[in-house]
Length: 138
Image (cartoon, rainbow, N blue to C red; front, side):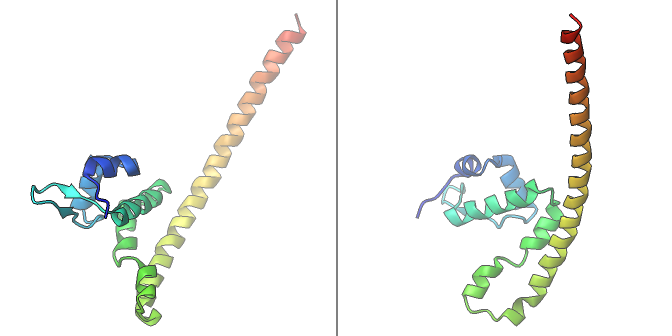
């Protein structure tokens, strides 16, 4: 099994070592395995989980919501390990609620960004027109 130091994990995930330690401190990441020397080490599964956290964070999801989202562990793994879906319903419903709320926030940000893009395009059109007139008037 391939093991990664915190610096290698940071490199693989593009999440700083400081941030990984912080995520561990706030409970977002489970405590890592440690070598006899006390140094943290991470497995490929840990790396994949870090990348998942990163993807949620990149969508603008708050750390609080991410923590709530991942608190119950990997639902797909539980389904594959014969946990009855009825037992998972509360976790699934909670995740649906979190994602629905987050999607609404992203839709608002998308509309705001579309307005900024439109304004920027308008400015560019204005500047191109000014330059075009300048060339035509020479």
